[in-house]
Image (cartoon, rainbow, N blue to C red; front, side, top):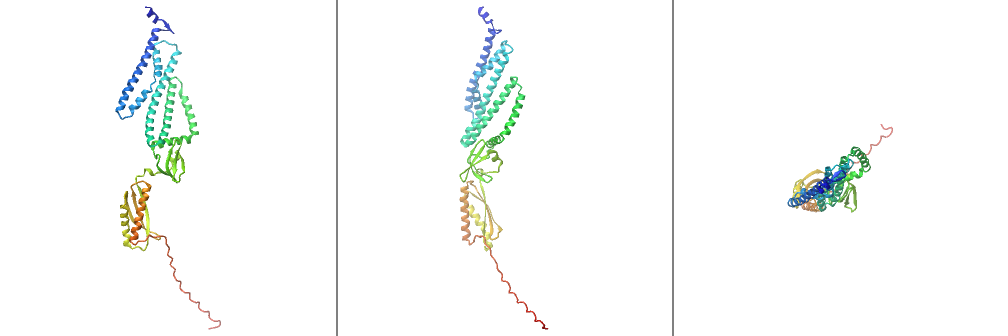
Length: 367
């Protein structure tokens, strides 16, 4: 009876029995969550090893971020409902529980963000290190947005009027955005490059009158190593606004060229030239013949136009093939006795008729 009487003794206007009950409830919730965390992590890890989908791996990582200390703070608030506490104490405990709960949500959300961006970053490191650098900035921005939203939600649950705060942040954000609009424009342009991938490291591109290989893609600038050896630096926003030609994405190259022969060439020989050109082109590897025609009466030549496709996008390979084709045309036409035309002018000088002597004027007084 003394033991039961001792449990009925009051502590802060609550019997010890109620304090023990509240503590048992809090500890039971904490132990249950801990056991659930351990079982979920073990089972999900086993499932993740058997599946190829990355979603279960992200859940395992998020579950592993569960903090028992934060769970304990929430469970203590739940257990406090079994007690009669002063009016000033309950809001404090509720505020601690709200902060702990939103912190735990932030840890779970942060783990998911880190997993997915880390997975993309790992793949990018193998092919495009610059993209991996930009993904680090994406991760930072995503975490900032996540924790900002959770902070606003936590303040709203604590009774703080966040409307004025959000409005103030909006006005301040506009002012900051106007001050750093160029930097933000380049930053979002870099994100667009990462997502859309108009070019990657190593691509040969031409931007306006500049050309070279992509050497670095940063948060603000992209650097190109020109053919002359110097480094060209472009702002990402300016680069996306420009007309950019990416030769690395070329699958085959269309080649058009012309040559002219002498006007003295026989008509039958002119008719045979397109067939000779076709035979020379189709004899080459990695080449698809398109057409060859006598196309124009030039100022000093009879002009032919030839079109063919190089099936290999490599520029050196194209130059090698074009050289072989050009030499073949030169040899074939010389063997046929056809001469290549070059700019000439022929001046025709026509003899002027001799002037007749003027008739002699009659002598004065002659009649």
